[in-house]
Image (cartoon, rainbow, N blue to C red; front, side, top):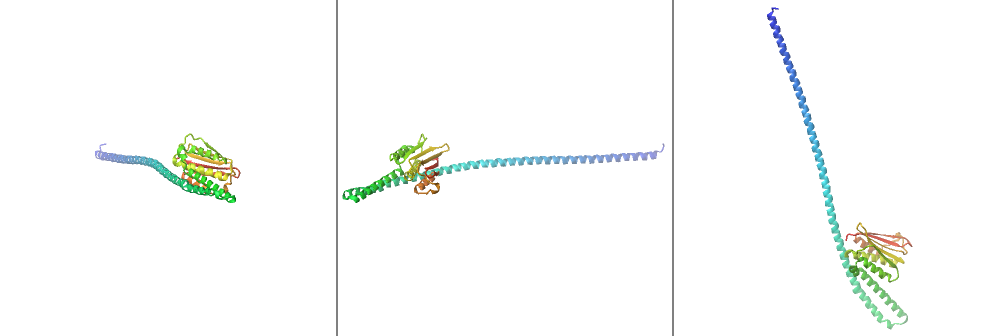
Length: 302
């Protein structure tokens, strides 16, 4: 339009506006980039944190698993150690029991020798002296002397039997089961009570330390039957079970008694002491006029 000055003014203003807009766009772009960069950094921080949390969980679970493995290993080790110690203690206990049994057997052997060699010798000497006086007495005095001599002879046999059964040499020679068979035969010769030995043992491999106590326990029960049961028959049973237990039972068809009336006399106390020495236990089953049965269980660790 020929107005060059005004045209230049508007042209410069136009270029200034364009520059301002471009600058604003650049600033906006910069802000956008900064926002995006901030978002990216935050996302990376979140991702890193998630990875760190995942690693922490992994380490935690690994630590927890290690703790469990350590605990289980420690428990297994403790159990093995405990079993080993228990085994050692059981072996030591067994050795102590065997030593006690050996000492008791030696003491019984000594006492049996005292009874047989000392007491019985004195009883026999008194009997011989009284027999030498028989010809000097007559009538009632003669009968009284005969009764005394008879009683001394009975005492002599009792002491001899006690001495033999405190430490019967036959047990060591032929074993426990055969010794019990011999005892039953000897008892049956007296025609008082008919004894029966019941056993399924094929081999008599009881040790010497346990054979004597078992024989003495059974002898004590047999002696109780002879003294108190008034029985016609009696049964002695001995067996071994698969769970390493020795089972003994002695029963009779005698008068029996009520379990409430049991009196722990010398015989039962002897049985109790001997069974306890072998770490066993026993019980009585009885009723009036229905006989008596004694059951004994002893661990077969000897």
